Image (cartoon, rainbow, N blue to C red; front, side):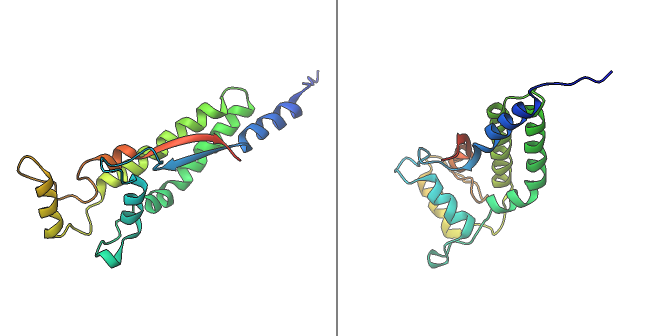
Length: 158
């Protein structure tokens, strides 16, 4: 006996339309700011690419994470699409979980950056901002706001 299911093509087209209408954005968004109003995205870009004119070396964390994780993230997206086609997964929820995973991956990379080491002048500047003695010698983690600010959104494409 042959079973014929009706509506499979329409369901597939609707799911693919839903998938193609959404995007996952991961990074630093405008609401993330330091207490003085400096956007965290601005500081993140300086650290990612460096600012030679200000003697700030590059300490990349976004690009290396994306390169290392692109296959894993791609597999997750493919799995979400398959699950959505099968009717087992809501695309927006799956993409939200993937975005959260990617943001976590970037945060872990930030926490693992150790080079180049901080200059003595940077360590002294960190100490002058502290109310208690002792500062972290680890790059990118002075206040913790950079790691805390890595976020994601799932949105409809414009």
